[in-house]
Image (cartoon, rainbow, N blue to C red; front, side):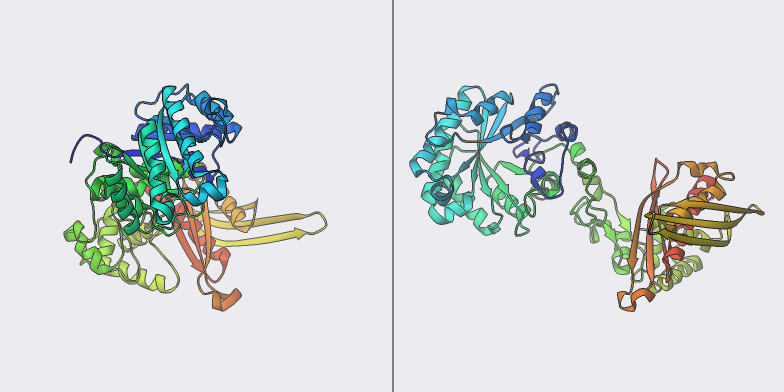
Length: 529
């Protein structure tokens, strides 16, 4: 693979991505993400549209104080207004005031949009493109041309759309970016028109900007790159308008590993998953477990035949080595599992369990029985580990439940909801009785459990619940249905997950809480595996 970068990455998470539903970036968020994108190795970072809002204007002011090691910062805007001298257009003036080395211009390249949306003449639109690009280039800016609705325009009147791009090239644009603005074009048409553009605009460096309305944004971008496009525009995790933009995370992995076109160093590529998780965290979005390459399920194996095969040869069911993109192999356990699943899963958790041992068969039988009862251990590693420890006689209870009682009082006049839990335990032979209130019955039960144990196990001071999920297993049974509770806990350094199932939501919650505490105490006690 070549060590020189022949495909440039253009990130528009901070502008196009921020237009996605549920995505909101503060000024501080945008600055943090910009720095992380630069560290990763993006070639261009689009910071926003300085003519659209005060936050973007402030971003460019603050961004001037940052030192980018790799990326060029771009301000986004549009061509001058129709019948307005470019030097008198206030929006163009704001683009210059942003002080970025790069300006990206969105321009109409579809005849329909020129006449029906801009309500101007075809010749005036060409003049707007030429004037604005030439003016910004004369001011020392690199200009990237984004031709809006490129492919729709080509299908309607390819001659005019090509004239728009030719005008941009002659005015000095560094990249001519073809945009599937509505996200409705198929890969075969993207490939066709990219070949046409390459033939008609021989000296141009083409780029591709796609949207995911048909679920084809990445495929469309790859089709263009395969036919000669040299720049890909997109967002981290595919954030964006409507169904989103081209997902740069997926695209980078495909371009570098599958198309064998170098975009970042191997070291940076191994940070791809971390970049995805970082941006999701800042955007307050839950990561997609099914995300290609970097999702938690991307290299997760459950079927017994699959697991048996990857134990012998991982490439038998993995298209790349997970480590290339910063991911790792996971073995799931469930009703479809074989002894190989159990053995490998135990191994990843640091437990020694032989595949053909009676203990492995015992664990497998228990898993299948419990899953028939409604349990799932795929995401509940801590509960699975406790199950294996019990099978290996490596488990000792840190406390025993005598009884618990949970009550809820509601005072309609005062608007008060009070939940209270009383708990009786045996800890090291001593009877302990506690009472606690909480924001709901589960929170009260959790508080009572901690209160009872903290004197014996001070480590629980650092433990907290970070996620709590409830799933009705058989909705047809109505209020008599079984309930599965999934709890994720953390001690500040690591997280672990547990599961409980019962017809009673409080009992299911107690089982998951008990496992969560048991797991932390067993881990701290360093019980040998």
